[in-house]
Length: 191
Image 1 (cartoon, rainbow, N blue to C red):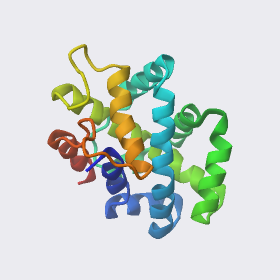
Image 2: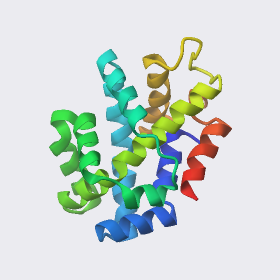
Image 3: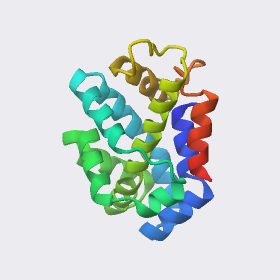
Image 4: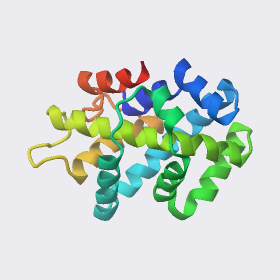
């Protein structure tokens, strides 16, 4: 199981969808559609941003600020949408409006609905990536060299495997993001 699948499963679990539905007023079916369309884009843009040293440094700093191991539904209920929108601004940059409109069009909803959902899930996505980084730090992952600490190359390796999976090119070796410890950490958030 790769990072994209783990995050998607967490965000489309019954408790998570229920929490999001209560918060946004959208149906669980609509929420699942938005998440299915938007999450691969979030990971794709994160990966692209992390390819520059400043982007990776910024992301590593953000991951350090978003360490939350509460269950996913609780994280969503407590999510700070302003923080979520700031996260989206950093991820999408000047393409934010375009991406939000594309997701809305593809999901068949208005842009405000997409903003509400993504602003709520963005902090969870960072906490999930933070858990991934912590897991990668605690195990020697194939394709990720941790001998020099967790750095930009490791981050790109982890995000790159998620972006590949999101674009339909899942790799057999997910650069360590399919490790039992990572899955355990993220699945514990789903309970």
